[in-house]
Length: 200
Ligand code: GRF
Image 1 (cartoon, helix red, strand yellow):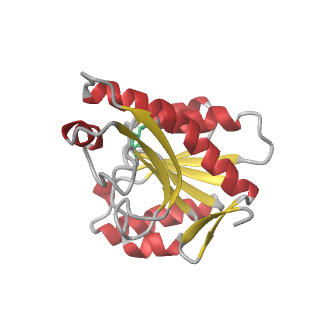
Image 2 (spheres, rainbow, N blue to C red):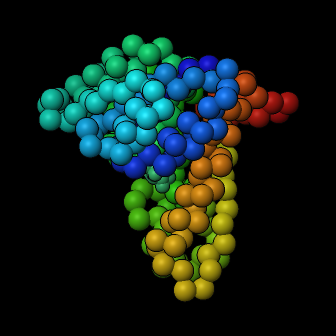
């Protein structure tokens, strides 16, 4: 099973995926693509010997042009699945449709709560007792695709958004590799616009 990871920043989720599949003979991280040349995640990929590519916004006038260039790079690596891991761009419906059922994202909230940005602050402001992260299939609706796996963490009294983010991130690093493994093993499938676990 081949996966391509798309990111824009630090890449701690990429690192967790690299570590998880280090010994695996069945899952290969075929490439890491970024829209930012200075993304720390690219260094993590290089250190692991994974090919990297940058598709820069400045080189593409429209969103459609950008996504076409991105898809061209992706196709070069022939992935089974594409994992967004802190990729900070909204993808066009054409791109999302092209990869239907093969495109995953991790979002730092218990979706459907808190789509979009500032999820940790919003969970604190709402006085929620718990928070978490969700791995989901990507559809044209922002952070709205079918959920695959969620991790919950408690919100502690006096939590800052940073402390809460760190607690959530630790769990992200567990559930994202797990979801990818299930997909690669065929235990989890995309069917009828939903995520199905084996036996359902
Ligand atoms: C994570 O919080 C993830 O849920 C969100 O972007 C962040 C990426 O962090 N989509 P990192 O670059 O993997 O460290």
